[in-house]
Length: 131
Image: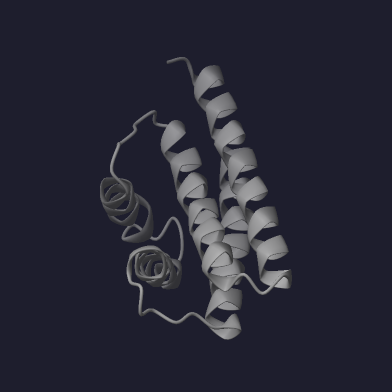
């Protein structure tokens, strides 16, 4: 894949992340917290995948995407280590929210999830522009 195509794919994936964030905010406003959590997580996921498009590398499983990102971008402090912890928390919350019938999500946790997605988009947008 040529560098130009990689950067175009990265930008496309970042746009997906922004759309997911918009959906998360809309669902939050409607007090649909489980759905808002899900969309915020996918915003985070697409943001991470936009970075990977620049290499280019890709994985099918979410845990592989996160592990690679943590190893190559969080542990090397290209992105803040605190963001790595927040991404991990977001992933767990999404899984609990989607698959655990007894999981109760509230507005505060959901808002934090949305804030993580928003901050990550901004960090990654700057990273992509500098590449």
